[in-house]
Image 1: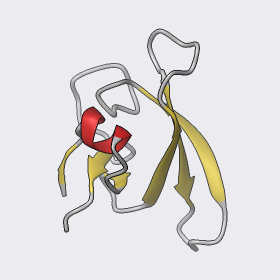
Image 2: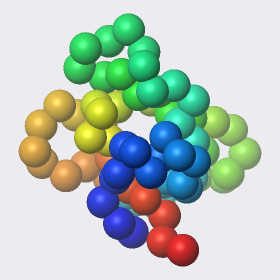
Image 3: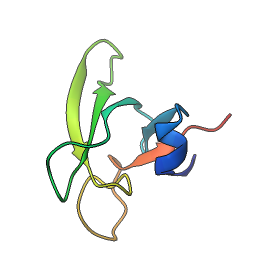
Length: 76
């Protein structure tokens, strides 16, 4: 997986979480200064989606430490 790239994601490039879960960003401009991105993440059974807020850097938490829920760019 490649590091998250906001501009590529806005252009429609595929994203996933660091742990490999499927993700799709449904909002880039939520009215939230710290977490403006809203993504729908597929559960481990790939059946249901749940919403998650992210920083504009694709971070699950507002910090520098990597988290399995962070967004990444899918390879290929």
